[in-house]
Image (cartoon, rainbow, N blue to C red; front, top):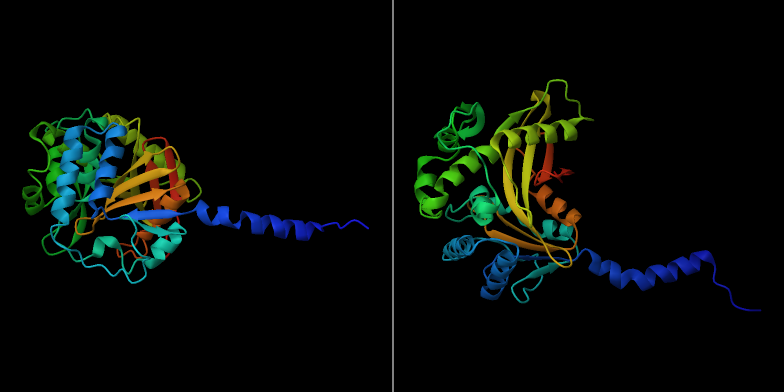
Length: 317
């Protein structure tokens, strides 16, 4: 009698044969760009994606300045570093290995995430609004000197810029951007790093659609033009009971022949981060990590990719 495999046994063999492929499918590599070879390779990716030479040089200087001082980070749950990268089986494994959120690392305050994204994107990211043009109201997240948080309206992009960034930060970063880009930096910061209100009729079922439409209407008013060869990734925090949300984080996503490279700055104190991922789902897991805890009571978190894609983030609180 010929030997016949049962369907269950056939399925088991199939799974066993596919295990090596499945284990590699979600591989995530992370670098904090403290390795010169990785930094040079990253600059090559930026150049091939259309970033200007001036923007790449500014980025390299900012990275080198950050690493002039060591940052306090516990690598005990990380695998050995190979060729400047730490490799994980999945983005969730990487998130679980972080001792704390990267933005909470003890380090001198440096360039923040918005300035990093705006500086790198350079003229590939544009706005039609001039800094002193009366354009408001622009709703801005503002933290007072005693730590109180509030949302304030601004009439111009320059007013919004001054509310969003305290004087000491503006002075610290004044020389990072070339003079030819200073007005664009002010106007883009006002257009992206800001707060919004949703229609009162917005339901949780319609949240994604209404939020994206609110953003796109605002971006059209600002005359925002997003890059074509890469994507500006923005994270938004929603306070649903009050029907408002704030854009609180920015990064850049570069397509590769296989997968993507994502670059961000983890807040002002956190390091520069490069993620090499095979799918967007890995990036969503990574972005959700920054919302493990939320002292401002936000209820939903969302990521947008240029003006073409929106995804809900499932935070692991």
